[in-house]
Image (cartoon, rainbow, N blue to C red; front, side, top):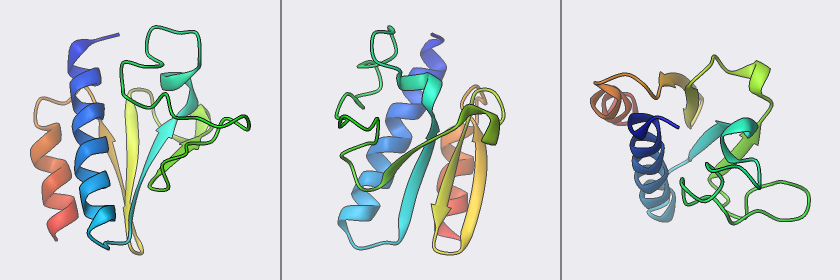
Length: 102
């Protein structure tokens, strides 16, 4: 797995987790193939907290079917707004923060 993807996904999880803990209506949607148990990616993203139904124990993380999201992308939801972000984008962090703050 590309280091940029891993770093950006970890960053998104931390930021969304902090906002969620502060009371914001936010969630992070991740394609299932990023965190399938038994793959090298499973624990790399810090998302190894899955229950038996393959759902995140983290309330702000939703696992979605891969065909719902473009390759190497995640979705963020803030209230009624949804944004899709490319984890390979060099400006990922800036674009994500801009989406969350506006």
